[in-house]
Image 1 (spheres, rainbow over the protein chains, first blue to last red):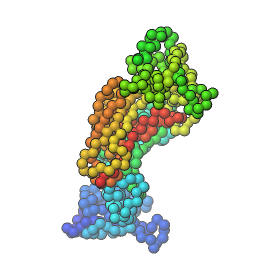
Image 2: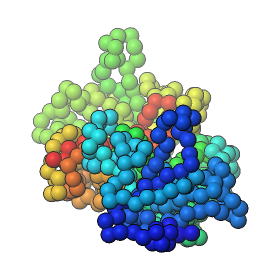
Image 3: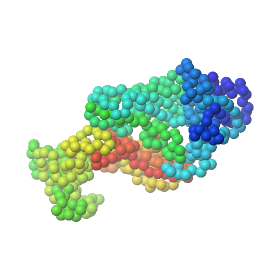
Image 4: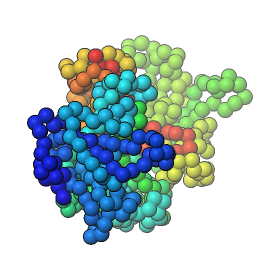
Length: 245
Length: 245
């Protein structure tokens, strides 16, 4: 069920700024005295087309691991806002301040900082969009392949701001990149499958690096994309080793 | 004076394969018993247009540091073959085996190897071309610049196989790249100057990464370009920090 329909039915006032999500969860420590995660999203994200309250996954009840019986899903947004075991949503006229909303939790510096900087808490802002990312899912790292002939490499790519625009792979540590074949997503914000044929020129050790580019032209970086205190949003390229024989 | 003219005057037989360079040098340790570096180049490199025996630099005798009174210069080739204090060149019918020509000196594995591999000596081959490279020479790393306005960044680029074809800079850790203005070289194999105007969007910490691309489309990598036992040919991008105010 769409989140926006549920919220609209409950009634959303003009003063609405943020949601607050609550679930039948326990603290990771198991200590029932400790505050349970309760995050939220800006009202525009909550009222967008794509947010859902899910009770079904692949035709079956959502597994416990994924949040049975009800799970929020806000595509493109950090997964921590997708409350599991959902019991309650409230609407606030300011940013939510539940557990894991404040301090350094799921927050980034409001300005770029040098590695290791101790950023004042009041300069941290909520992370609201996941950067473009991709994975190599085949073959397994360390696989032996024949040199001089094409070997298929494939994986998935996604972006917090919509469809991935392009996918490239490199077999020479980023000195050159070749375009991969990229499928459209089955639906908005879904993983996109990609594949490429790579030919390793001679016997030896190679790495396959995979790099997705989002619709704004931002690519995954080869190293970490700027430092932040908790290391959020690290979307550096995934790499696997291939041994050419 | 061109090296090829000197060699042609001395006479080069069809059996010529390699040069061997000797200089009035001493071992780095100062120990006069130790063998002094003596390297050479394939005869085709020696007979190319660009190799010179130099005695003059910027209208003056070559400084002692650079090899007074005579210095070989083989452009595009690893600098270790550019013998200082040159006294003798012999022509060989096989690869030279002087000090620093054999074993792991200025040699690369004949095939790509995984980091840390102990490569058998007989699998090492002489490095014969320097990969494309560039430096940021202005401003100094850590310089403060105003955000929201253009700041000039500049430097030099070169490649072992001829002219550099393109130069790019990134201010977002390689997520996007902008093309820099690249001057043609004053002469073949000379440094090419480049410059770019970068605008840092807000106050904070940034890095400028500079990436040259050679005429074959190979770019400097963001990390080390494959491992080799002595770490030769590391042409990863140069980066400086800029502090936007």
